[in-house]
Image (cartoon, rainbow, N blue to C red; front, side, top):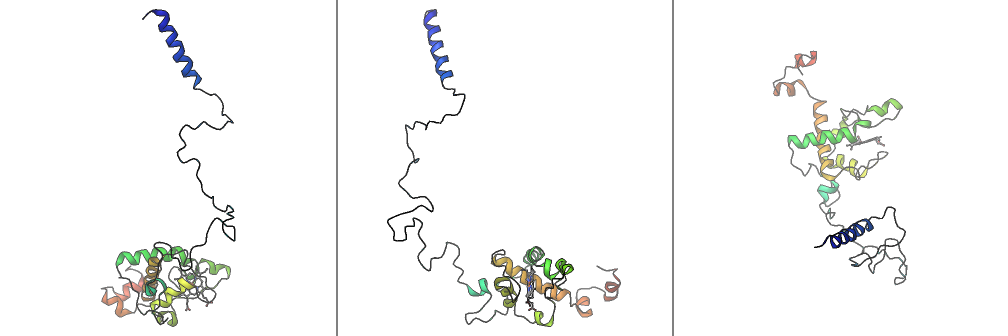
Amino acid sequence: MNISIRHTLLLIMLAAFLGACRGQPSEKPPIHTQYNMYWQERFNAHQENPFFEDRRAMRMPVEGTVARGHLENDLAFFQGINDDGSYVERMPVDMTRSFLKQGQHQYNVFCTACHGGVGDGNGPVSDYGYIAASLLTENARNMPDGEIYSAIYNGVRTMNSYRHQIKAEDRWAIVAYVRALQLSQDAGEEDLRELDLDPEKFASGTQP
Ligand code: HEC
């Protein structure tokens, strides 16, 4: 190849290479040789659609539609009640140490502020004059598990529902932990001996 052809070729390549640099953004729409799915015959969310009487492009789901994974037809598990509407006596979940731990964590996140770390109703908000119920009363101890669950799911009197913040399994874990608090805060000497703990040492604080 003679030298001038080689130079010309190099020059053309350089020009093509530099020509690809734009230097500043362009206002012009890009040229599409291949459309892919850039333009589709479809409506965007909230767009008007004259086809329907209400002119909404977004349609309401058919009545009774249940989102996938949200069937929640197990009343005992999801609402804490039996078919006749009464509270379930015992929680429908197996109790394990890790489940209780899970409940402790969730309780501390969602309930402690008002009901206090041990459930006596003296949470930090009580410093500001807000009084939450104690969960250690005779009344609360005698509640069926489902009633405590329902307090979380439906709320109770002036207490709000926490169903949207806490998922079903965690609600039961909290119920389990509230039960543990009720037991621990009402432990008698017999209970301590059963666990090989010395009540006297326990009272003097030398045994944890
Ligand atoms: C914002 C404060 C607040 C939070 C957070 C809160 N509660 Fe309550 N709770 C209350 C108040 C106030 C009452 C008493 C309602 C009434 O009697 O009007 C109550 C009542 C209850 C009762 C009924 C007690 C009884 O003897 O009737 C239960 C059970 C209960 N709460 C459980 C829980 C659990 C479990 C959580 C955590 C998921 C929780 N609460 C979170 C304020 C709170």
